Length: 357
Image: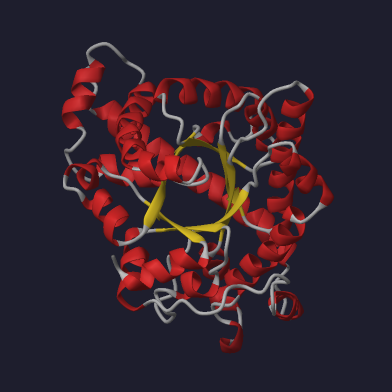
């Protein structure tokens, strides 16, 4: 087992891979990540599947088979995705069971076109979770204003949720509140409160948004500061009376997940965000290139301080320099939604082109 990745895992952070393709399932790459690189979970999104399905012919035979009885390209996509994610979930099943359902999850996202439709999101989340038929699956729901009540309802229904498209501490805390409300309602209804969840905070897009507008001394520091600030809020929340009362009744902790941790700045270290955002009882989901780079030369140092360290100081420096971080957080969430929508349209178009007319 790779020592660099093992050290990060032993610090208490779960390493997940942010990618899935049929090829990595067929050729044993995913199993290799699990056995050699300490990977204990997997995330996916519309962009990942758009690249996987549109980038080769691995899915052509199943598309043709499904098209014989299904004309809706969206439903064909979900069948393709669920076929892959069932296999991945089975690869992580042992980890899921050994960690008492804390780890070993894969994630399937609802259609990004539903990000502003609460009721449709609730319905699709329930439908997908039933159809995929695996216990170690998170249904990904965006932490948009319309997504928050859908998260609460989906948790109340007993479905594990990975909240996506979070960009700030405020957005993270709103997602955490939705999760906790769902758990509290389960307790009130006499239902099992032991339901796992993750809240995915996007990191690298912060720096990509401001790189050309800040001085060299502030370059590639904003995403890390946001991650540290959110971690401090996470530590405060899980120590709160509200969470501890739920824990005493059998509730679980919604873990903070550091997402989008591949470095986009060519002048920055390719393991920048992984090294800087190591912290116990959290998750880091990383693209394969970043995962393999960390295995090669990543260094596991001290974890994020519980109070976030220098996060507030760095965020103040950005705001003083003209970056309105509150406004930027809202913009990044909106742009993230638009980006997933564009990938979705490309993905559905690729499948549609293969359906006989």
